[in-house]
Length: 108
Length: 121
Image (cartoon, rainbow over all chains, first blue to last red; front, side, top):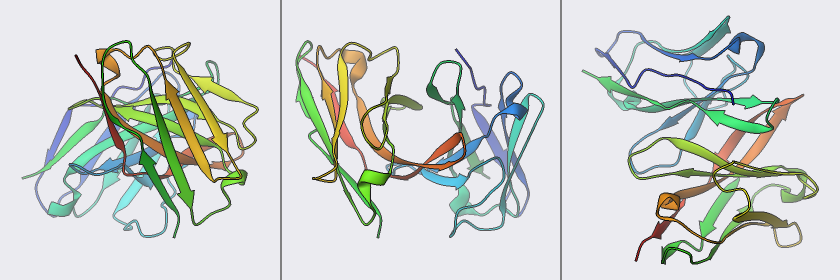
C-alpha cells in the first residue's frame, strides 16, 4: 500500500517561513491535499490539488509537489498557525485515501 | 451553510455494535460522495470508508473490512456507519467528510465535528 511520510514536528519563529514535507514514491504524479487540525477541532482543508487554496485560507499558505516530495509552505507564520498538519492522496492502485502521519507545527 | 453533524458515538464493550450517523445540510447531499475518517486518541487521521453519491461504489480500509458497513439515505440527507465486532483499537473520534473532486482526484471538505467511540469493558 502507498505510504506518506511526514516529519513528526517542525518548529518556526513568528514571522518566518515553515515548510512541512510529505514524502511518497513518485508523489509528484499524484494530487496532494493538506489539512490543518487544531486541538479539539476537526480537520480543515488548507491546500487542495497540490497548490490551490480554498476560499478563506490566507495567501500565506501555499503548496508544491514534485518528484518524491510534496511541500506545504506557510509564510510569515503566526501563533494561530500552530496545529497539526496532514497530507493526503488518493491511491488508485488500492482504491483508498491515504493520510500522512501528521506534523505538529510549533510556533516558538 | 454547508454542515455535517455526526451522532451515535458512545461507550461499547468489545465485540459489541454501534451505528454512527452523519446529518448533512446546506448542500445537495445526493450529488456528493462521502467518507468516514477516524482518529484514535493522540494519533493521526485514518481513512475508514468511502461511498459514492448513489451508494453503488463502496471502499473500506483493511482494518475495518468485514466488520463495518457504510451506507447512505439520500432522501434523509444522511450517512451511516454500522460498526460490528468492535475492538479496543476501534476507539477513536469518527468524522464524516464530503468529497470534492476535479477529475480523478478528490479531497475532503468540509468535515463534521466528530463523534467519540470508546470500546472498553
